[in-house]
Length: 420
Image (cartoon, helix red, strand yellow):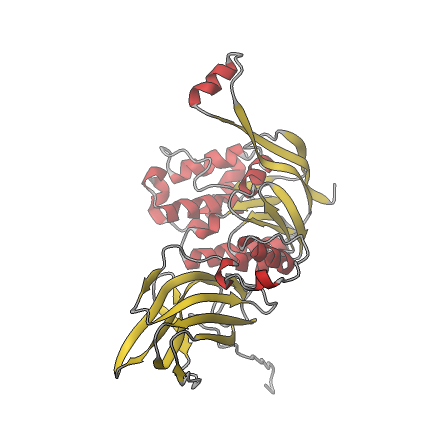
């Protein structure tokens, strides 16, 4: 038996792009038509050792799902080859391989048969599958009547309980409630302890960091690098802000240092902006502990929020603020220069003020929205000078989440025994 469960060798996948649908038919009939070649994958190679948990990350359109489909035989490669040594169970798309007219039970047997199991082998695993899916009497209803959550419960239960040697998952855990996701990840842990091989694609960088032994980074169909989760997440963060992580950073010229901070990371094009603009927020950024402008911060790491304000009129004691919200719009935390007792005593027209807030990140892993504000008093009246709501998203990457929004960062001791 090989030490490798999966070997991907110089893999290419090319699609032909036609100017109009009829060109495809003309080409099939032997006519020459204009055609463009698009490579979803180009010369991609990597190995997955038996018992490894390997993640694949990359921006949208980088070829992550295409690789999984080729490995599982759903797609054929244009060039190169894939060698798989072991029985694969794959969860690529919601309901893939399910017949919408069949009941849940019938789909269990259909999927099991497609994976090479006999009826007797599926019979032996049926109760474990139904217990894991936990969808009650719906297993006797056609799956076309299922919610998306029920769909993924049953699909994952089948994939995880047919005793595969290699488990391949593509973003499937983003559906379903938090309790079901926790159950799936516990099963991941069991698989790892049993020495099974797991290959999965996810945009959830916290899961990538927590579960993977190694990570492969793709960009536009090309493998950029592979290595530890931390190294690859750091490189991925650079990709997200349009930087090439394989190149050494350029020396900062005077011209480059003058460019706006927020040109170096992702800004929400639909942010809500309002206020009198007697003072105006002209720039902002989030900077990690390595000095990189980024939308991704590791839990527990130090980071800095910066904002630059231009005063168009003389303003007495302006207040500069930031706020974190969750994606449902609930305000989680934030602060301002007044709370922090760092007063801007007076600003004249034309003055530029830069404020930096530096702190450690102890929000739970997940997605957040960051807002900025400049308020204060004008002629004795409280005035909103400028607010940028939901100016950018912040992804917190964590390998340990606790209850609620904020980690108390507890130090835990346990003493057991008669004298404990």
